[in-house]
Image (cartoon, rainbow, N blue to C red; front, side, top):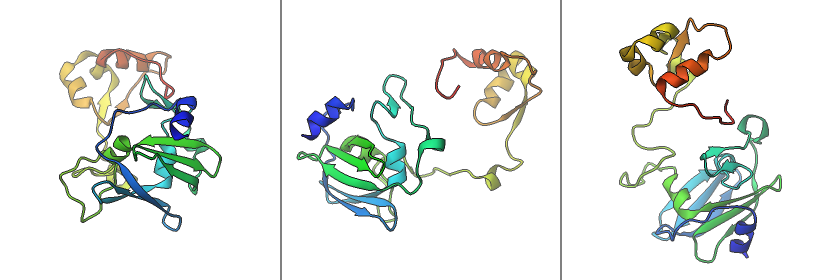
Length: 195
């Protein structure tokens, strides 16, 4: 039933996984889903994170690897799963949300994005909160973002190299097409839903 559902809804299937979901426990009070894997480790996933990262064809563009889902306007910060199912082989988790949307996640994808608990072994890779990752906030960035002059970025390779990352670009002309000039200086441009 689950495999038929996910094929109809446009969810991509993954190759056989070595990380398989054994059991799940929904913790509404903390807004988390606790998942036990076939190696008996337990990891947690915020409901909001799972809804925001839905991999269905309505929320995620498979060829550009970009989310289509409008996080700012469409994500209910208090969303909870209405129904949670694990496939019989443990390779897929399907969540029906309180807004009736359905999300399916392959176990390998979920495991690669696990939240590490303090006792969790540091040997396993985690995209969601890897060791050494420092999250930004307004206080950490206030008056610390490097600034680069637009014209200098267009003509000086070293300035361009030093600028790549997070920076404010100053003195940009107010005519249409200026951002494209800078984009083409770095690489080719591609239309996305971000602009």
